[in-house]
Image 1 (tube, rainbow, N blue to C red):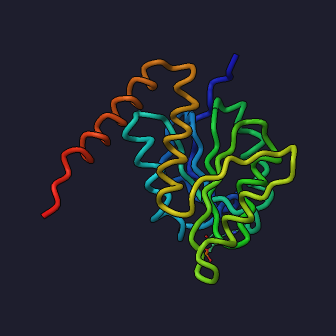
Image 2: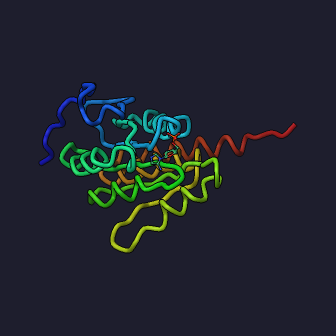
Length: 186
Ligand code: AIR
């Protein structure tokens, strides 16, 4: 049985996780959205908003595989016990966050490569997607499409055990189709 989640609290300044912050902390997140820097938020808010639109309890926060390595391991190791079902991890450049999370949990981890300044996100894509056999990361597209699709993929996974979510996904697809069919070019 899943243990009830402790209510997420604002971290005190002495806490080693002080460099991260919780953006949207519900009491019982089913999905964790993690990103390597606040500079990723503009893109990752698309994942956050997509989950909100489907009414999925989630938590979005900054965790860096390089700048807060211990906290990253701690979050991954504690996620299953908190009742989290899926982790979405986004990072840019030497983008190791999704891989590090996956190394510390058997929960499904979805990686979103962020567009980078130097190499336009190709670096992020390759460092997220090229995992060694044994530690999978489901990698989505670079940037906004990847952020939105990571959330939709997480919803599809959750829908396996929640038929009402599957119905919402079908309705979302129908609306999307309708918009295309009704498109008029002027
Ligand atoms: N990053 C942060 N820690 C490890 C990595 N790979 C990534 C962030 C962001 C990029 O570095 O995910 O995409 C630049 O971060 P910043 O904070 O310098 O803007």
